[in-house]
Length: 154
Image (cartoon, rainbow, N blue to C red; front, side, top):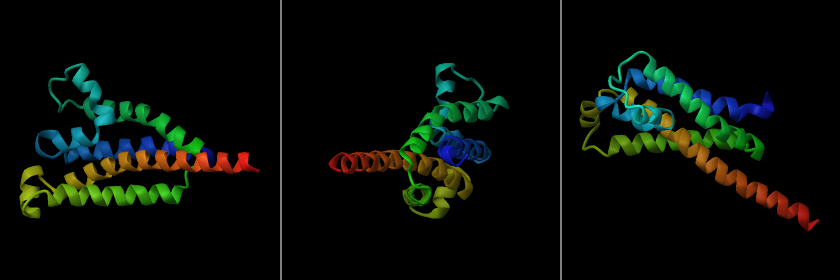
């Protein structure tokens, strides 16, 4: 199981956060759609009418898990340090949260726009997840290249 940490963890984090985010979706579900984009794209293709149907968040979570599993597998193959990835996730989440809140004149104005701080926090977690995956893959590829270079030098 240790060797398959990311292939399970990354999709699971996405799915849980996406399902929770559907409960605090932001103005007209905009934050949920933006932060669940890896899973919600199917709705644009099949032109879902009523977004409030019970199966929409579940299907979105499932599709997102399928999309993110190969990226998790790649992180596992690159042997990315888990503490590094967690740090990237935390920093990315905090960054996205601050950026989204501070784009308004006040916190009160931000809450009036999207309903709650929970909406911003949950959206920021999945956006931070995407950033942690991208940065993790880049760092992991760089580390793998350095390992290969060192191995060939000896």
